Length: 195
Figure (tube, rainbow, N blue to C red):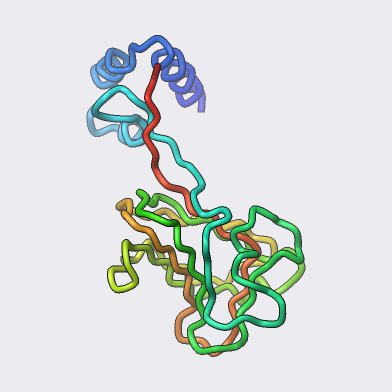
Protein backbone atom coordinates (compact mmCIF):
# COMPACT_ATOMS: atom_id res chain seq x y z
CA UNK A 1 0.00 0.00 0.00
CA UNK A 2 2.79 2.43 0.98
CA UNK A 3 4.76 1.60 -2.18
CA UNK A 4 1.67 2.30 -4.30
CA UNK A 5 1.15 5.75 -2.72
CA UNK A 6 4.80 6.68 -3.16
CA UNK A 7 4.68 5.46 -6.76
CA UNK A 8 1.52 7.45 -7.50
CA UNK A 9 3.13 10.61 -6.14
CA UNK A 10 6.34 10.03 -8.12
CA UNK A 11 4.50 9.37 -11.37
CA UNK A 12 2.31 12.44 -10.94
CA UNK A 13 5.36 14.58 -10.16
CA UNK A 14 7.45 13.08 -12.95
CA UNK A 15 4.77 13.41 -15.60
CA UNK A 16 4.09 17.03 -14.73
CA UNK A 17 7.84 17.74 -14.86
CA UNK A 18 8.32 15.81 -18.09
CA UNK A 19 10.68 13.29 -16.47
CA UNK A 20 8.51 10.25 -17.11
CA UNK A 21 11.11 8.17 -18.94
CA UNK A 22 13.85 8.84 -16.36
CA UNK A 23 11.46 7.71 -13.62
CA UNK A 24 10.65 4.54 -15.55
CA UNK A 25 14.35 3.71 -15.96
CA UNK A 26 14.99 4.32 -12.25
CA UNK A 27 12.09 2.06 -11.26
CA UNK A 28 13.26 -0.72 -13.56
CA UNK A 29 16.78 -0.58 -12.10
CA UNK A 30 15.52 -0.69 -8.49
CA UNK A 31 13.00 -3.51 -8.79
CA UNK A 32 13.50 -7.12 -9.83
CA UNK A 33 12.25 -7.68 -13.42
CA UNK A 34 10.13 -10.61 -12.28
CA UNK A 35 8.53 -8.66 -9.46
CA UNK A 36 4.75 -8.85 -9.51
CA UNK A 37 4.55 -5.27 -8.25
CA UNK A 38 6.81 -4.07 -11.09
CA UNK A 39 4.65 -5.81 -13.66
CA UNK A 40 1.55 -4.14 -12.18
CA UNK A 41 3.23 -0.72 -12.21
CA UNK A 42 4.52 -1.09 -15.76
CA UNK A 43 1.12 -2.21 -17.03
CA UNK A 44 -0.41 1.04 -15.78
CA UNK A 45 2.21 3.35 -17.28
CA UNK A 46 2.01 4.88 -20.73
CA UNK A 47 4.57 3.72 -23.26
CA UNK A 48 5.97 5.10 -26.48
CA UNK A 49 5.72 8.84 -27.00
CA UNK A 50 5.23 11.05 -23.97
CA UNK A 51 1.57 11.01 -23.16
CA UNK A 52 -0.89 9.49 -20.76
CA UNK A 53 -3.31 6.69 -21.55
CA UNK A 54 -6.55 7.21 -19.67
CA UNK A 55 -9.90 5.46 -19.61
CA UNK A 56 -12.84 7.44 -20.89
CA UNK A 57 -16.49 6.43 -20.78
CA UNK A 58 -17.68 6.36 -24.41
CA UNK A 59 -21.20 4.86 -24.39
CA UNK A 60 -23.25 7.58 -22.69
CA UNK A 61 -25.97 8.89 -24.97
CA UNK A 62 -24.95 6.74 -27.95
CA UNK A 63 -27.48 4.80 -30.05
CA UNK A 64 -28.48 1.51 -28.48
CA UNK A 65 -30.95 -1.29 -29.05
CA UNK A 66 -32.26 -4.40 -27.36
CA UNK A 67 -33.82 -7.66 -28.52
CA UNK A 68 -37.43 -6.98 -27.44
CA UNK A 69 -38.70 -4.03 -25.43
CA UNK A 70 -40.82 -4.62 -22.33
CA UNK A 71 -43.42 -1.91 -21.66
CA UNK A 72 -41.77 1.55 -21.76
CA UNK A 73 -38.26 0.36 -20.73
CA UNK A 74 -36.33 1.34 -23.84
CA UNK A 75 -32.70 0.51 -24.59
CA UNK A 76 -31.44 4.10 -24.22
CA UNK A 77 -32.16 4.02 -20.48
CA UNK A 78 -29.12 1.75 -20.00
CA UNK A 79 -26.64 4.35 -21.24
CA UNK A 80 -28.25 7.64 -20.24
CA UNK A 81 -25.97 8.22 -17.24
CA UNK A 82 -28.91 7.98 -14.85
CA UNK A 83 -28.62 5.56 -11.92
CA UNK A 84 -32.24 6.18 -10.90
CA UNK A 85 -34.15 2.96 -10.17
CA UNK A 86 -36.76 3.70 -12.85
CA UNK A 87 -34.27 4.40 -15.65
CA UNK A 88 -33.65 0.80 -16.73
CA UNK A 89 -33.64 -1.15 -19.94
CA UNK A 90 -35.77 -4.30 -19.92
CA UNK A 91 -36.34 -6.93 -22.59
CA UNK A 92 -39.49 -9.00 -22.93
CA UNK A 93 -38.81 -12.67 -22.20
CA UNK A 94 -37.16 -13.74 -25.47
CA UNK A 95 -34.53 -16.44 -26.05
CA UNK A 96 -30.99 -15.13 -25.42
CA UNK A 97 -32.03 -11.50 -24.91
CA UNK A 98 -29.43 -8.79 -25.56
CA UNK A 99 -28.63 -5.11 -25.19
CA UNK A 100 -26.20 -3.39 -27.55
CA UNK A 101 -24.65 0.05 -28.00
CA UNK A 102 -23.22 1.61 -31.18
CA UNK A 103 -20.30 3.85 -30.16
CA UNK A 104 -20.26 5.57 -33.57
CA UNK A 105 -16.72 4.52 -34.50
CA UNK A 106 -14.01 2.17 -33.25
CA UNK A 107 -12.57 2.68 -29.78
CA UNK A 108 -9.92 0.74 -27.85
CA UNK A 109 -12.34 -0.93 -25.44
CA UNK A 110 -10.77 -1.85 -22.11
CA UNK A 111 -13.69 -2.24 -19.67
CA UNK A 112 -17.42 -2.75 -19.57
CA UNK A 113 -19.28 -1.83 -16.38
CA UNK A 114 -22.75 -3.12 -15.59
CA UNK A 115 -24.91 -1.61 -12.87
CA UNK A 116 -27.54 -4.07 -11.65
CA UNK A 117 -31.01 -2.85 -10.71
CA UNK A 118 -31.25 -1.54 -7.15
CA UNK A 119 -34.90 -2.45 -6.56
CA UNK A 120 -34.96 -6.17 -7.41
CA UNK A 121 -33.98 -9.07 -9.60
CA UNK A 122 -30.18 -9.14 -9.30
CA UNK A 123 -30.25 -12.95 -9.45
CA UNK A 124 -31.48 -12.72 -13.06
CA UNK A 125 -28.17 -11.21 -14.16
CA UNK A 126 -26.30 -14.39 -15.06
CA UNK A 127 -24.76 -16.22 -18.01
CA UNK A 128 -23.82 -12.94 -19.73
CA UNK A 129 -21.64 -12.97 -22.81
CA UNK A 130 -19.97 -9.55 -23.24
CA UNK A 131 -18.62 -8.96 -26.75
CA UNK A 132 -17.28 -6.06 -28.80
CA UNK A 133 -16.24 -5.53 -32.40
CA UNK A 134 -16.00 -3.29 -35.43
CA UNK A 135 -19.04 -4.89 -37.06
CA UNK A 136 -21.78 -7.31 -36.09
CA UNK A 137 -20.04 -10.21 -37.84
CA UNK A 138 -16.66 -9.45 -36.21
CA UNK A 139 -17.49 -9.55 -32.51
CA UNK A 140 -14.82 -10.67 -30.02
CA UNK A 141 -15.41 -11.97 -26.53
CA UNK A 142 -14.50 -9.40 -23.89
CA UNK A 143 -15.67 -11.42 -20.92
CA UNK A 144 -18.25 -13.87 -19.61
CA UNK A 145 -20.19 -13.51 -16.36
CA UNK A 146 -21.51 -16.72 -14.85
CA UNK A 147 -23.34 -14.98 -11.99
CA UNK A 148 -25.76 -14.70 -10.48
CA UNK A 149 -25.40 -11.07 -9.45
CA UNK A 150 -26.97 -9.49 -6.42
CA UNK A 151 -29.47 -6.66 -6.48
CA UNK A 152 -27.55 -3.36 -6.64
CA UNK A 153 -24.23 -4.87 -7.76
CA UNK A 154 -21.71 -2.86 -9.79
CA UNK A 155 -19.87 -5.32 -12.05
CA UNK A 156 -16.65 -4.40 -13.89
CA UNK A 157 -15.33 -6.59 -16.72
CA UNK A 158 -11.88 -6.19 -18.26
CA UNK A 159 -11.34 -6.79 -21.96
CA UNK A 160 -7.92 -8.38 -22.10
CA UNK A 161 -6.52 -7.87 -24.62
CA UNK A 162 -8.11 -4.53 -25.49
CA UNK A 163 -10.70 -4.83 -28.28
CA UNK A 164 -10.92 -2.33 -31.12
CA UNK A 165 -14.63 -2.00 -31.61
CA UNK A 166 -17.63 0.13 -32.41
CA UNK A 167 -20.31 -2.18 -31.01
CA UNK A 168 -20.61 -3.62 -27.50
CA UNK A 169 -23.18 -6.31 -26.79
CA UNK A 170 -24.35 -7.89 -23.55
CA UNK A 171 -26.30 -11.06 -24.19
CA UNK A 172 -27.86 -13.55 -21.82
CA UNK A 173 -26.96 -16.99 -23.09
CA UNK A 174 -29.34 -19.95 -23.43
CA UNK A 175 -32.13 -18.46 -21.38
CA UNK A 176 -35.71 -17.73 -22.32
CA UNK A 177 -36.12 -14.80 -19.96
CA UNK A 178 -35.54 -11.07 -19.78
CA UNK A 179 -32.49 -8.89 -19.45
CA UNK A 180 -32.88 -5.81 -17.27
CA UNK A 181 -29.95 -3.41 -16.81
CA UNK A 182 -29.79 -0.23 -14.78
CA UNK A 183 -26.75 1.23 -16.53
CA UNK A 184 -23.87 0.15 -18.79
CA UNK A 185 -20.61 2.05 -19.17
CA UNK A 186 -17.97 1.31 -21.78
CA UNK A 187 -14.48 2.52 -20.93
CA UNK A 188 -11.99 2.99 -23.74
CA UNK A 189 -8.29 3.85 -23.76
CA UNK A 190 -7.63 7.32 -25.11
CA UNK A 191 -4.28 9.09 -25.45
CA UNK A 192 -3.71 12.42 -23.79
CA UNK A 193 -0.59 14.46 -24.47
CA UNK A 194 1.50 15.45 -21.47
CA UNK A 195 2.35 19.08 -21.48
